[in-house]
Image (cartoon, rainbow, N blue to C red; front, side, top):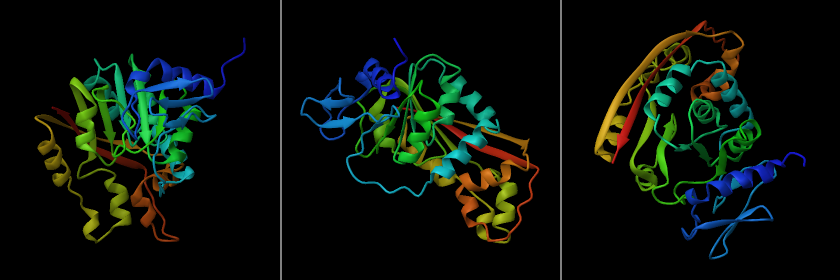
Length: 276
C-alpha cells in the first residue's frame, strides 16, 4: 500500500487526538468523516485541506502576514538563534503530553520543541499562509487555521500552552489547560534585537522598549507565575539580515535605501510561566 496522502495523514492524526477538539460554533464533540472533514453532532462541518491542515475559522479573517514573512521566519528560526529559548521551554514543559502553540505561524518553534519530547503538538494561527507552511514542513503535528475567540478546542485539553512573541487570550488559555497545566509566554525584554532597533529607531522613543505592562497583565491572570529571563548575543550572518527584517514588524519601518549592518544580534526575553 502506498503512502497516505497529506489529507489522509492529517485526518488520521486528528482522529487519534479527537478529544482535543470541540466545535467552534457550538462546542459539541467532533468526529472525522471519510470524506476528509471534521463534523460535530449538530452537523457543523470543517474540511481537512489536501495539505493536511484543518480550517476551523467561523468568520473571514484578513492577515497582514505574508507567505514571504513566514518563509523568512522559518529561515531565521532554523538558523538556531532561538535555540536557547526553545531549550528552556522544553525543560519547562517536560511532563506535558499535549501542547498547544497559539499564534504558531509557520510552526517552526513548535516542531523543534516537539522533536525533543514525547506527545502531540497542535498549532493554531489565524493566518492561513502560516498554517499552509506549517503543514508542508511539519506533518508530524496538527495544524489548524482558527481564532481562539471562537475556539475549536475542548475544555481542559492541553498540558502546556505556548504563546511565543504573539498576542494572548488568557481566559481561553485557562479554559483549555488541564489541571496542573501551564501557560508559557515569551515576551521581549529591553534588549531584544536592540542592534536592529538602534538602527531603525535611532533617536526616537521606539529605540527603548519595556514589557512591564505585558508582564503585569500576565501576573494578574494567573495564580502562580514564575519569570525567567533569557538573554544572549549570537553571531548573525549577512544572509540572515534581510530575513530578520522581513519577519519582524520592526523591519517594516525600514526606510527605502537605508542600509542595515549587523554582525550579531541580541536575544533578550522573559519567559513567563503561569498556572491557575
